Figure 1 (tube, rainbow, N blue to C red):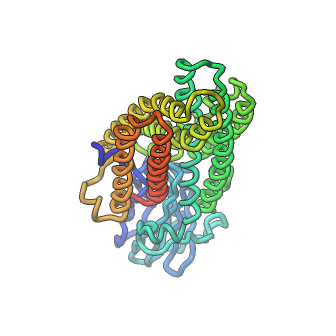
Figure 2 (figure 1 turned 30 degrees about the horizontal axis):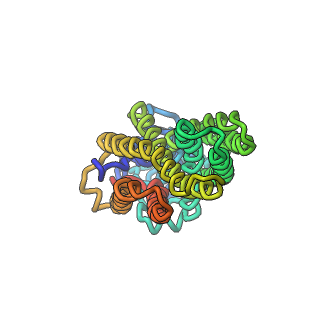
Figure 3 (figure 1 turned 120 degrees about the vertical axis):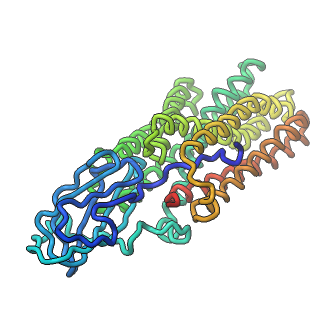
Length: 439
């Protein structure tokens, strides 16, 4: 169950079958070019281009949806004898575009088809008979900046949610046991608001970069179609609006206003949902199950690791700056005691949601070591196991030693290790989501 915790998800729309089939020799001109994919498609941002025997672009009718997984286009006329190549671009509801091509042959002689309209005349940059390579070296070369943007986006998202969880859960629990007039609560709350503000700005930047990368990947699709004709686009807009609300909310909360934190919590709720709405979960045929699982998975992970980062970066420093007779060790121990039950619940939720999602999506186990996707996933699993080991060490060995200042030093080190491992998990995840699942 622990090893399967980070779920294997339906990743990218792969071509499952076609009519005509790849390499097929037809006696007559086909009446229809039909493509069936592994994921639910967004037909408005999918394209089919047919290239004739002499490199001319053959005119096709509009691309129509023939079911949730299938698109098709009709040649405007009969095809002459020769070998034809079909180039396709398809995007699932997760917003990830895939490209590929295959060829078929028409025997005999038929009237030539008229030329293509300008909208389809531009060639699609694909060669070979498959989609883009799933080799990680190719993926890095083709999208290094996008991988970094996704990684920074994950870090920023976890930080925003962590700041909200720190304010309402950790400081909320502490307020029950210490005087609400204790300056520590105010200092820590203001520090968390500052932290959340910077994280929200970073999330805005990575969100815009994601749209730029998406528009490059779908360069033949108008931007308004990407934004307003796809579920991915609407979810992107929701995420951007939530980021802007979060910036305003944290700025207000920085002044000590509770209403600012309530606004930040509302923005955090939207941000928890958007990864599922712009990722692989929404593209599954079992979206009614995979989307809630993904939302819980993100919520649990960001609440656990994001809050721990806030404690490390903001909470301990706030405790050190707070005047009074209470020692630094005592304040830090109180924070960790307030955080620990939440972390245990979140860890269990991550395992449960990840394992359940894996049961829904797991391909044959051999793909873990026979494909690039599986090998990269094994790297992620190794970091996840290490993350749980470090977390268990902090819970069982470091937490009981808190109370004195020497315990704080040990906590600083172990928490840095835990947060660093978590950052590596997110880095591998940012790379993994760009790889297609093995066939």
